[in-house]
Length: 381
Image (cartoon, rainbow, N blue to C red):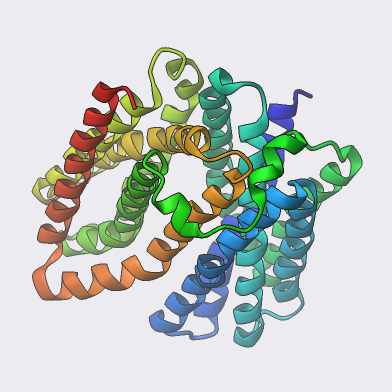
C-alpha cells in the first residue's frame, strides 16, 4: 500500500472511533437522565485539555518524530473508549472523554505532520485533499456504527465496537513502524521558542486567522441549524436529513479535490470557499422549508469542506523548518477553543438577538474573509 493511503487509512480508523465515541457518550449520558448542560460539559471536555496542550504536543512531534505520538495516541484512544464499555456511568464518561480527546489530539497533529512530509511541495495539496477525504469517510462511518450498535446491542457493546477501529490502526502502525520524518537538518529549528514567533510570522498569521474563521463557521452550523430548524417547525428527522446534506457535500467536494487542486492555488480555493460559505449563511434566514434549507446546507458543506486541505497545505508551506508540528498545534488550539467556547457564545447571542442576526453576522465575517483571501491570492502570497 502506498504510504499516503496507508496513513489515510490510519486516520479513518482512529477518527471513526473518535467521532463514534462522541455520539455514544452523549446518548449514554442522556439514557442516565443527564441534563443538556451535563451533556454539553461532556462534549466540551473533549476539547478543553487539547485546547491547552496542543502546542506542546506539536513541539513534541517536531522533536521526536510522529511514530511514538501516533502509537501513544492510539493506545490511549483504545483505553479511553473501552472504559465506558465496562461501566458507562457518568463519572466514567467524564474521565473517558478527557482521555479520548487528548489521545486523538496527539494522533491528529502527528498524522498531519506525516502527510505534510510525504512527497514534495507540489504534491502537498493533493495529499492533504486525500487526507481530508479520509476524515469525511470516518465522519460518516463512526456515527452510523455507533447508532446501529446502540440500537442493536446497547451502549456498552457500542463502546466495545468503537474501540476496534482504533485498535486495528494501532496494530497496523506497530506492524509497519515506518513513518516518514523530516531530515535532521529540518528538525534543527525545533528548539523551544515562543508561540508568538509563529503568530507574528506574516505568512502564518493569515492562515491561522482564516483557519479559525472556518472553524467558527463549522461550529455555528452544528449548533444553530438544529435550533433554527425547530423554530420553523421541522421535525427532528427532517433536521437530521437536512444536516446530512452538509456531510454529503463535504464528502463530495473532497472526492474531487485531489484533481481540482492540481489546477488551482491554495489561496484561490480558500477565497472561493469563504465566498461560498458566506453566501450560504446569508441565505439561511430566508429559508423556511426543508428542501431549500437542505440545498443551502449542501452549499455550505461544499465551501467549508473544500477549504480544510488547502488551509493545511498553506500552513505547512508557511511554517518555519522544524516547527511544522508546533504550527499544527497552534491551529488545533484555535479549533478546540472554538469548539469549547463558540456554542456558549452563539447560545447567549441567539437568546438575546435571535438566530437570524447571528447567521448574517457569520455571513459577513466569511465574505469579508473571502475578500481578504482574494487580495492575498492577487498579491501572489
